[in-house]
Amino acid sequence: MAFINLQKVLVSDSLDHCCQKILQDGGLQVVEKQNLRKEKLIVKLQDCKGLLLSSATKVTTDVINAAEKLRVVRRASTSVDNVDLEAATRKGILLTNTPNGNSLVLWSSLVG
Image 1 (cartoon, one colour):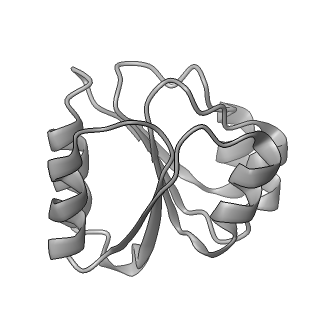
Image 2 (image 1 turned 180 degrees about the vertical axis):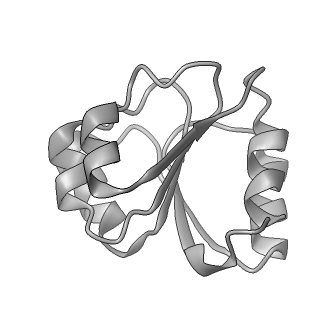
């Protein structure tokens, strides 16, 4: 299943660069910005429906509540310990991870 309605996604951590092309070829606009502090992350998420990350980005309650358009958070890892699960659940945000941290699987699954 493709998340074509995501339209625009933010990549906030270092992931394999070939993955950005996969998303773009799938019709998504990709913004790649790493090492964002909480305030800058909130600003960048204002017009993004998807967030792709690994371990560096912390997705706190404040970030989730401020990101009004956010619908999907996907982490290239076996865990999601850097995302506030309760806040994401309350807001109806789909939160997923990859079983082996493979970012290529992560990206390709978003575009179908």
